[in-house]
Image 1 (cartoon, rainbow, N blue to C red):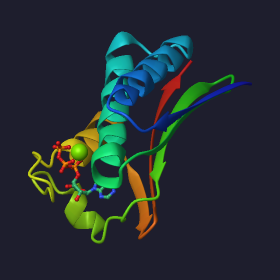
Image 2 (image 1 turned 120 degrees about the horizontal axis):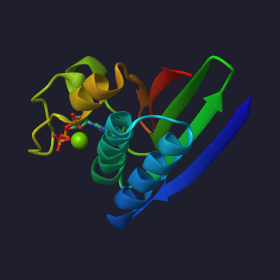
Image 3 (image 1 turned 60 degrees about the vertical axis):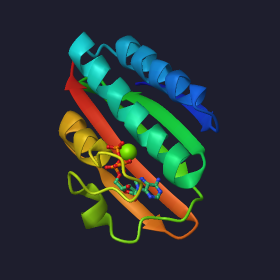
Length: 134
Ligand SMILES: Nc1ncnc2c1ncn2[C@@H]1O[C@H](COP(=O)(O)OP(=O)(O)OP(=O)(O)O)[C@@H](O)[C@H]1O
Ligand SMILES: [Mg+2]
């Protein structure tokens, strides 16, 4: 068992790159292949970009848990912004409240194979993870 965790505060545009890079580094260290590293990095940039754009910033936590059989990388992005009133609608491809493409959340779900969102005014938490067999 070998656990690693990184926390990145999201306040500025350049924090997207920092979080993305931290995710790629952790994924590589945990033995994920280059394709999965890119999936993870892309998912992190979309979620961090959402926290920045829709909530003015937040926190990105990337954690790796390794067992004898598998390695799981979990990404948690949280913010204290306005919240997402209709989560099912927000996840639909093409839905955006800011004239974006509205593809971020659905892309994360496809890239990572799942996505869970908890949201109320003042607290939104988005969690996604990827597991590989060792
Ligand atoms: N952290 C958040 N806080 C509040 N609302 C959010 C948050 N993340 C997503 N949303 C809402 O969900 C919608 C869909 O998000 P999604 O990432 O799919 O698209 P987008 O950010 O609008 O555009 P794109 O990501 O394609 O540039 C957003 O338009 C916004 O209304
Ligand atoms: Mg987005």
